Image 1 (cartoon, protein in one colour):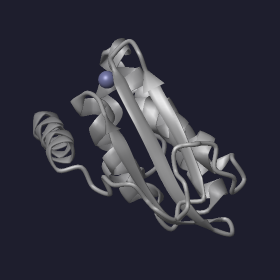
Image 2 (cartoon, rainbow, N blue to C red):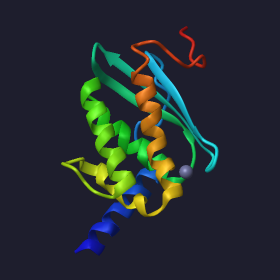
Image 3 (spheres, helix red, strand yellow):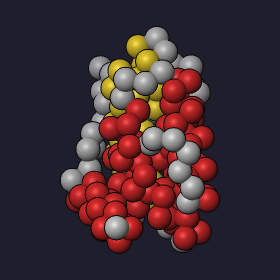
Length: 151
Ligand code: ZN
């Protein structure tokens, strides 16, 4: 039973790595932040379009290992439509799950990342996109990146 679940999670991660969702620049993003993990070479930018307190659109760009890319891809699927408070709540759950392997409540597909707690080096890869997303949303609507210029 557990092996089946582990297989399923592994497939989910491989699938998201191969076909990352929301993998694009968001031209009208009003919150962006970059996250880098020099140890692994992961480097991503998270783009979010906030409508008041709600994540209207969220996407990412960059490159890195399978875990970080899958984590970023599942993150974008998970955060769309959520408020800042809901995002923070989910971030806390994911952070606890990745560092301890324990699941606290329903995190949906994000449960696929629970296995990384066995690999301390991979924890940073899984959490990196989340740190970037939190930094983006904490920008209170300001663009923290200088990369995007409005036409
Ligand atoms: Zn990595």
